[in-house]
Length: 486
Image (cartoon, rainbow, N blue to C red; front, side):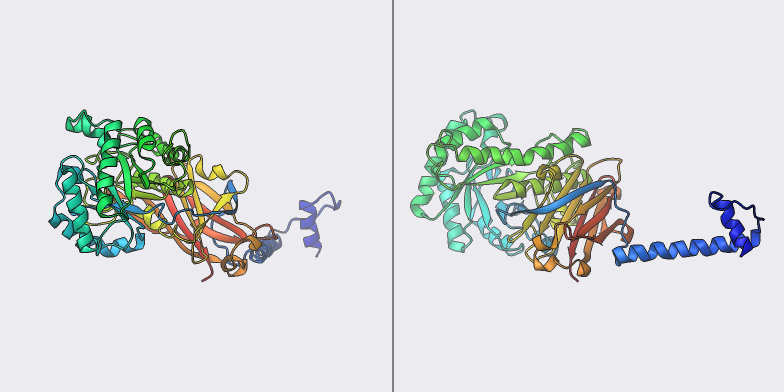
C-alpha cells in the first residue's frame, strides 16, 4: 500500500506531501488495471445512453426536424417519358421498384417527327402492359399530322381502351421556328391552334382533358400568352426544363436545381391571377414538368448519365414534391442516348437510383421540416429530404454535392408525441435499410449498403426528441435511410 500511495503522490503532489519511491513493476500493473477500469466505465455509460448504437460519432452539422405538411400530389415525382422504340420487356422487373406514378408518350420529338399511325397506337397498348399501371399523357402530332390525324389517334386509343388522362397538343412548338423553319408558330398562333384542336376533340370525346403548351423550357413570353388565351381550356399547364447545355462546371450545373421550386410556384401563382389568367383563374389547373433533365444534349452523357446527374435529380425531386407540382416526367426511361436511367444494355445508370430512393414519396407521405428554418433543408451543398411514408416508416435521402468534404450529419428527430405510433418507441427503432450511391468506374454506379460505422440511430435522452439519425456522407454521395421497427 505504501507503493500505491507513493504512485498517487507522484501524480497528485498537491494532496500528498511525502516523497515516495518509484516501483516500475507494481506501477505498470496498476496502470493497466486503471485503464481497464476506465474502459469498462466508458462502455457502461455509452450502453446506458444508447444500447444499440454502433454508428459514426455525431458530426458538426446538426438539423432538428419537426413534422411538416403532407404531400400535396402523389404523382409529383417519379414519372417518365416512354416511346415505342424502348425495349421495356428487358427492364420490366427493374422498373417495378420505381413505382412510376405517371408517364408521357411518345418521348421527345418522335411525336412530331413521325406520324402516329394506328399501328403505333396498337404497339403502345403492348408497351403499357410492361410498366406499372398509372395515368398517361399522350402527345398528338401537331407539326406534321394535322387535326384529322389527331382525331384518328384519339379514336384508335378509345377503340383499344387505352385512353390517356390528358392529351398534349404538340411538343415544343416554341422550337418550330428555329428548328423546323416554321416562323408562323408564335405563342399567339399556338394558342389559336390549341383552342381549335381541343374543341374538335371534345366534340367527339366530351370527357377528354388537355395539357399544354409543352414548350422546350420555361419561357415566360410563351406562358403569358398561353395562360391568358387558353386558361379556360387547359387542364394541365405543362413545360419542359433543361437548365444547362451540359458544358458548365459540375458545381454550377448542380446549383441549377435551386430553380426547380421557384419556377413551379411562379406559374402556379400566374394561374390564380385574374389579370394573367382572366378566363380561367377560378379553375383548378394542374401543373406538370413533362420533360426534364440537367441538360438537353442527348449525345453528351456527361452530367445526365453519371453521379452528377443522380445528385441533381435527387435535389430536384425533393423540390418538385415540396413545390406542389402535380406531375413530373424525367427524360427518359430507356434507350435515348444519354437521356435514360437505363443504359443501352438495359442496366441501371446512376440516375436510376434517386428514383428508387424516392419511390415511396407517394400517397399518404408526410414531410419533416427543419425546426429552425424550413428552407435550410434546401440550401447549401447538402440535400436533406425526410418524410414518413404510408407504412409509417421514416425515410431520408441525403445528398452531399461537395467535391471534397465528408459531412458528418446529425438529424434530431421530433418528440415521440408528434410522431405516428409506428415510430413512437425509441427502444424499438433501428435503421432498417441504408443504401449509398457513389461514382463507380466507367460510369457504372457503385450502389450498395452502408457500412455499420457510417450510419446509426441514437435514442433520445429526454422528451424533446425520440432520437437522432447520424450519418457520414462522402463527397459526391447519395444516401437513402429507412428508420422503423423491425
